[in-house]
Length: 140
Image (cartoon, rainbow, N blue to C red):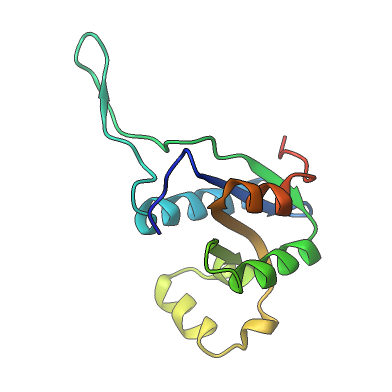
């Protein structure tokens, strides 16, 4: 996907029952994955007047919202069938692993229907993302 801030909206939705430390972890992982996999989501580096470098940040706001675990699953189901929406699910299974190798071994042995989501990232057309997430509260 190529991100266009004038056309797209992005958001991260966290399970409302996730403890704060795990919620921060989930949002961080999704943000890193967005930066790695979504073309043009991160802008160029900037410099202050005294030439201190500030690495590029995301081109658009990235609200972090709250929803129930059931609603996260509904979002995943809806988004995976829509070619215009980029979906970044993050599971409790991933969060419980100590290494990436362990994650690979464990996730490859489970049916996706049995994987509990703790967060999900969505990027897509503004109207579609707003329709899916516009009623969700901000994480505070």
